[in-house]
Image 1 (cartoon, protein in one colour):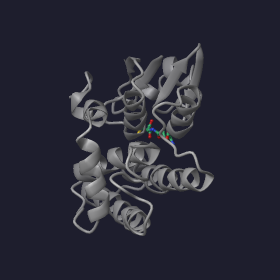
Image 2 (image 1 turned 120 degrees about the horizontal axis):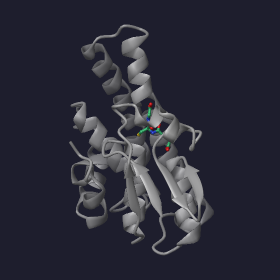
Image 3 (image 1 turned 90 degrees about the horizontal axis):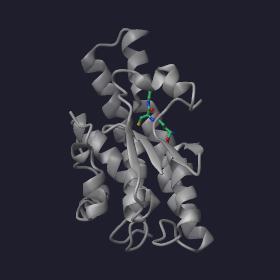
Length: 211
Ligand SMILES: N[C@@H](CCC(=O)N[C@@H](CS)C(=O)NCC(=O)O)C(=O)O
């Protein structure tokens, strides 16, 4: 398998964690997001969504991190990243989507670039925007995690797809110096995940393209 990745891409980080948890080897291909390499025809012409990550398996290119993780889950069911029961699966997907659809797109590279380049916001205003949406999303995530169903990890006592989403989002929040004190459950789960080698090895600083 080939994974198109960038050390700071949190969507690629989700897939790196899932691959590591499942013990699957992959070849990393580095696309420099900050230099806009994902917009070059060599990448966006081949992979029409033009975002990271892309996973190539059996000569097919897959996009969207959660679709990729579910593909890996179907093809390599052990260890499971989703529980067996339908309600549990819905809960894990809901937590994952809260990060992937409600927080991440508002703080994505192209969103922030548009705020700066088209709307003229300065660095401080962009950082305020970033932290605003972290606070909005993390308050919801904290409440959801704390109301029950979570164990050592987001869902029960083994790491799963929701943890693959939570950890990269916490890294992003820390990078933008968001106040994380109001989210003890998120941070407890983050700490538990980071004790695992699969999460450690996937983190931005450990990637060969890290700057
Ligand atoms: N929902 C997508 C998000 C993909 C995405 O936006 N990835 C970011 C990196 S984390 C990206 O490629 N950004 C490029 C840009 O915003 O121009 C997923 O989960 O894969």
